[in-house]
Image (cartoon, rainbow, N blue to C red; front, side, top):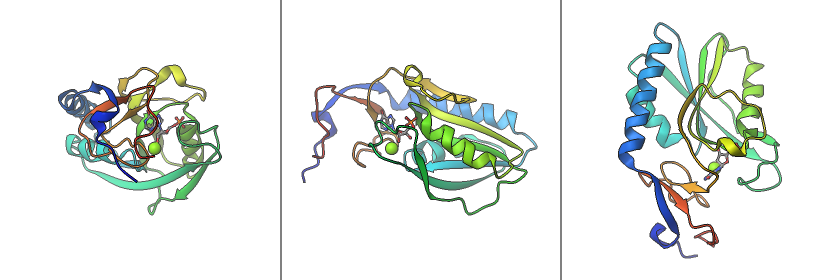
Length: 187
Ligand code: IMP
Ligand code: MG
């Protein structure tokens, strides 16, 4: 397998590093104000949310804890999750009575986050909210509340800053758009 350089298939940089960092700092400030005096627990959905999570944690100025979970879509690949989501890695801490904020890289159809919200709400958190870096709002199929949103983006396949193409390119410090006519770069 040959892994291409991202420049071979990138159409454009959609969000530059500076804009990402500025927006993440704003979200961190907003979250710090809203959760002042509360038992804030950030839950990151692996793996796309990790880069956003670690920058967001640095931007949050109040004490908080973190935990991780992972989900997989049944059937079709990540580009068309069809609403069937399975928990592949569960939390290690109890969320009962706590103020839980889900940290996600991107909301597309909304099926993933809708399933995770259903699942977590059965464990009786005090509050349960969603913080998404990217929102492909026009693709939404499931109704999901997005309390904190980094950017609303068009219906294009994106990568970088935690988001992958076949598991690669998560390390890039910007959000890039794949050229529409390109097949996946690692095939
Ligand atoms: P949803 O269930 O349709 O909302 O899909 C959400 C998941 O699909 C995200 O957590 C991502 O893992 C993946 N995803 C959706 N759009 C993109 C994209 O443009 N680039 C990379 N991953 C994406
Ligand atoms: Mg993914």
